[in-house]
View 1 (cartoon, rainbow, N blue to C red):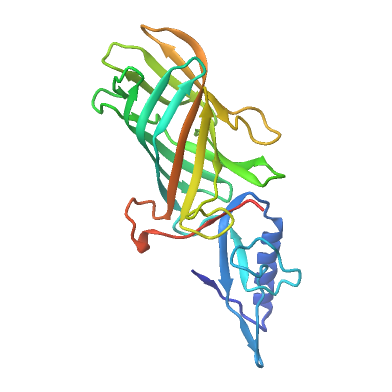
View 2 (view 1 turned 90 degrees about the horizontal axis):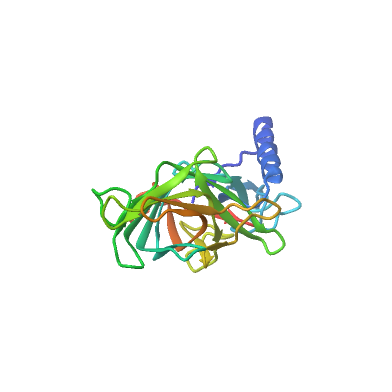
Length: 282
């Protein structure tokens, strides 16, 4: 873990410490950041620290700003992440289902509450066991139409639960299209956004530093859980079906558990590719 050097006895250092303290005070959970150990200054037999927190989780502030740790909002220089999801299910309220054996998330944290993501699904099929894909060249693979942007916010501020809302970059547009079977067939176009909850777990970075993160996307009968952030309008997916089986637009849910590893954003579990971060909700 990187150390933040605290110089003593000079005006420049005092201003730097004040600036860090102000930034920490201004930060509002939920947010992604780093809880880093500060370097102490020897004063006689004592070591004096000037961090805002006393523990490596950066949850409870030190009133005297004499803790061993400081909170730095946002990611470090290695701001990318790579994630793999368990079996993914896309289901409309009308009962259309697509099952994918895996999902892949590739992205980067762009701020304390924002990210950009590329999302794809592999080995996909519908209820009739027909392969579902975006293009004929890659059977069984559904890929995004462009970059998705994520926003971190509270699902329930009282319970301190937070989630990521993924939507097409710019706020509107198509997430992906696919068809099942052979062309010409019915074309499904998925639009809107989807919220997944940041979860706790053995490897999770929820409220402590970790290279691992867990986000659960959960839906029941086509309805996302949750459908909205606290105090905000619903943000859900919609599937438009055209072609042989024309249908009215249907609300759609996505279910998968996404496990990410932060750092260089590569799917190689080597220490050089990893950098811990924390998703702080309290």
